[in-house]
Image (cartoon, rainbow, N blue to C red; front, side, top):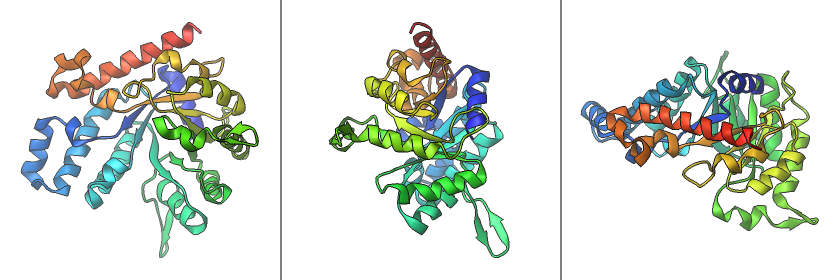
Length: 309
């Protein structure tokens, strides 16, 4: 996974991952009307609208970015049809050559953790058949249960050439209630970062970067500086850009001296760009073009920040 991601970032000069986190309010009426005309105002209708919306976004940005990150909750809320849309979204993104990071935030122990890992990164055996359930290239993992929750994911990653991004310092305002608490004189997020570095040393790509990365929010740039030093060979997935307040100038410390080591996520800032004043001229029918323009602006913002550091 990590070698494909690094190669994509270098080729496209865009350390950007587009968050495919669709909400009904983001989807233009003409897509909803078409889906509801065929399926009714049902879970199936919602899932069909989500899938069509996603395909439009992916078609518009796939030549600009190396990766996408579908957030599974936005699909789960529509039940079984929603999860089918999630799977079809993953497959469609792979057809376009994109790395897919499943934002699933799983975390459990033993066989349960192993089942989560198999579902999203591995395979399952049904009779004599070996089948791939969802097939993302990487997924997000919650480390709260400790090594018992991480080890099954490591095993599947080693076997299948996949990766994980472990929650270390998240972008939400209340993250400090737990993550900033001191333990042995260090904030908890720093200790988790050291564990990520240790786990990551077990599995690396040819690029020299580990298949095991970390999630560190753009809203905490100074903590990003500390964690970059703690995890020198672990890629950082950076949420919080755009709608949550992060900007290119906040991100420079997440990257190494070569401009690698981080990939920045933007979700609603891209997929709902058509609703923003900057891109309103695109209109609802141009929602995908608005997403493309938002990616180009984000790419420029990050590049200028890295060049000026």
